[in-house]
Image (tube, rainbow, N blue to C red; front, top):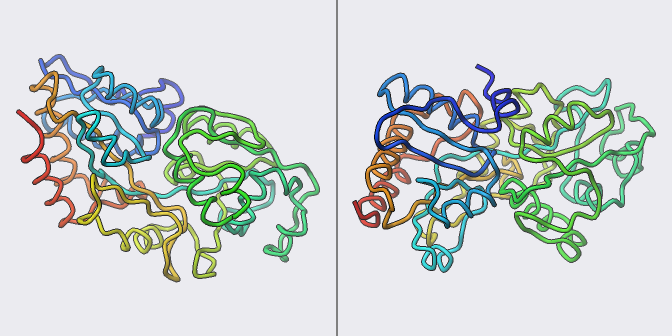
Length: 336
């Protein structure tokens, strides 16, 4: 099933809905939509219970859970402990994945173009404006690059993908950090805005000489040309699950209040530099306790039976010790 097409057409996960009393409703990040949709479809088949998830971006997902209009919110930009406390929310990581630069350059195959974080920052700053700029040619001496202008594509909505992408650019490019910084929404120096990972993927797919950033499953499903990256160790790496796992292996979830961990620009020769986790937000004292209990059943099922499905889409499942920590958190903090 092409889950990305479902998002483009429908704008939400309608992979499964049901008429039972405690419908699970969620909203937020587009980053994990492909895997949430796959899990929801399998869960519906196995249990008959449904999930309705609106793929509307992390910023909107946070607002909806704060407003108590959904059972859970989803965000790739984790909330800090003080914000969670203020809003009476519980947060945990559900799965990990990676963000990749994608380009539309005729004659260039996936993984052939090499970019660095500093160069990527300069492109998004509007300093590097043509594909045959000396800085790009220096990293790609064997490629034939056009002299055409670069069309920069970025998110127009509040986005956890943007949070992690701009966090990485802030670590890799000093001028980006000073002038733009990190956030779910930033004052972009240049570029064309598109809504959701699906919007950026669609825009890049249709626009010659463009560049954008998307969660890796979107690049794969839409057959986009992704770039290789030079990581913190100075090694050129391809976006593979092994490279994502190498970056994720540095995470110390047990010591992080509210599981607040950012996985960008991790050390290690094999690490993919723009790796990220995606998080679930729920109220500690839920408005609808039956729906909340049903959501926890779905998340528990996803942890127990969803790893293979996640890996098939090149996401990284949460390690078993972390899952055990999360399950203890549910028991201790959610009032049933």
